[in-house]
Length: 198
Image 1: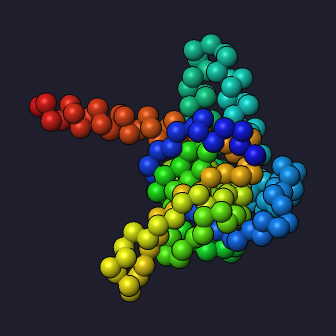
Image 2: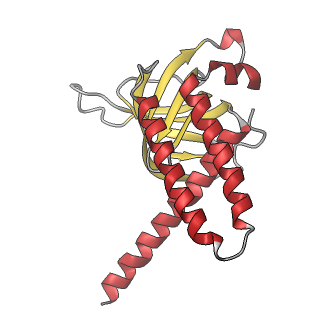
């Protein structure tokens, strides 16, 4: 469980998520049960990212000559992560696909072609391509409203889901990813301001 759901900020970002209804009467899975629910590919990606973070941290403590080695290894590990994530998402996905619009360490906002009921729980697979994050968690719907009520041919809903059960390492990945996305947005805004001044 997330102790304080207001402790993390969210950033706008496009991603894919897959939702499978979770029967609340069976209770939320423990952290070990959630780990057991992960596919082999997801476990492998998590392990690779954990090892990579640990090794890169050790290399950063070396002198300045190690910077080139660190940069090269980061590039190599990113390639491995991208391949693993691609293979993972192209596996047969469980659940219905929704389009992610915003994420953070506390939850996600999605656009869905079907209505979600506030209070319901969903087993959720999240794939953030640009930040190479793939994870499994249990989310609870907190809000859901139709965003195009006039268009009956293809209705859509905007829904907010908060994490009810998520691995601590995955929260850390999401927080790092949200900081990276925010940094890119700030850099882009700075470049736009500089262009306007010219």
